[in-house]
Image 1 (cartoon, rainbow, N blue to C red):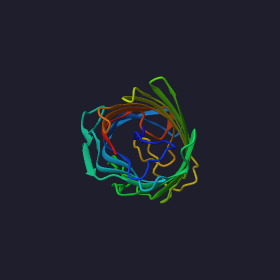
Image 2 (image 1 turned 45 degrees about the horizontal axis):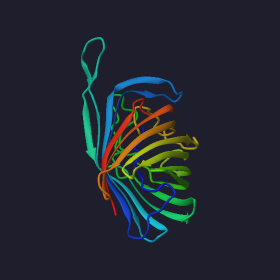
Image 3 (image 1 turned 30 degrees about the vertical axis):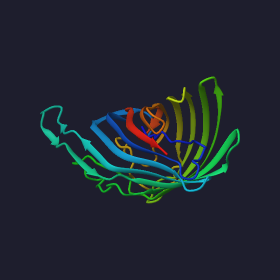
Length: 277
């Protein structure tokens, strides 16, 4: 249920002048969602599409700049029809805008060792559309952002080992997300297991546990969205990438959840192409 980029490093950082850049298309379409008790309820068919640029660049051999910029975001819902009369109760509609954008820095605390460690800071800029009236029962909220400025601080440790022509890597990280505008703060634990086969094919399994501290005052708690306050999940992503050349490649991923609260109950997909310096 979340947009996961094929980030080039985990706990590793790029050397000065090196980098990783990707254009991606992410989407989710759902006709049901998880409630605040973890059960599923139906909703009108809704969806979100994000066309984005993701980049990492080595400012120094330890300090990297990062950005995630959804330069086109579309949110839609189908019409709501009465089950008894067939009358259209709420017309279908859609909105287009740029989406919430993240800019950040990653710093290598331990580099060039069997186990590396980096720290990162992301700043979430509320550039998407987030205005709606939660008391208006005649509209379905359409959002391309949550309207809050957040700060994510985290640590990631990684290691790798080569077996013949297969390089296996493992990463483990933790994050704290300080949120504003009445949204609850969050803690996150991220794990990743991957393999690079013959320097061409990359296979990755990612696991994320998102926990809400439930210390906010926002009443935006609608599971038929990707922007609900107090959303929680244990989610996973399968990712496949292929290095077409030493500099260019393509990616595909599939993300879903083992359990969740207050998010869509449908898988998310992403395709992309990337370039490496």
